[in-house]
Length: 186
Image (tube, rainbow, N blue to C red; front, side):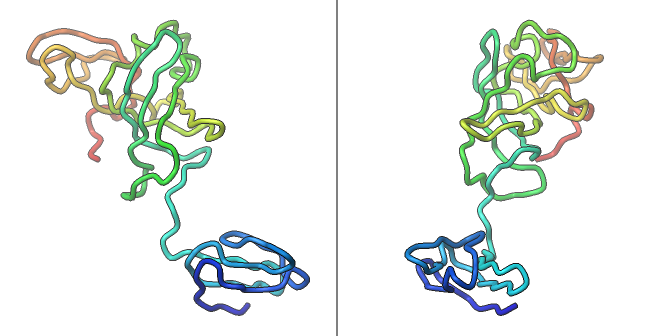
């Protein structure tokens, strides 16, 4: 395998010898780099690819993300994906997401507002990226990881399975909680 540093637009190979792969594109029988990185010409697989030293943080199905709930409706919640678990770089793809009522809990849920509230921080799994970002919180480790009281903005404490209470106002609110609610530090 031959390797060298390339820039976008650099001609890197001929299509009669290699197949364009990640970080490349083909035009008029020639293969060009589409990103900055190291060219890898794999003679065994006959592929030409460019490996970026700092690839974009693009979400894919199965990724775990932290998101804030922006709004709740009867059948879905809208959220903004903030970060992919295990990274500290901004997400490069679309961050506007939806969580359908049927994807919130393994149990029957008839109202999104009984599980999430505006401003909640949730851990969710990506279940779709096209045509839009879709999330689920059905697993035990997924769900609300941090929430504030809707009245006084005090951080809510877990008081039971699926129940949060405000230590200041003494109000109680249901949520679809992650199994480690309150222990998450982002």
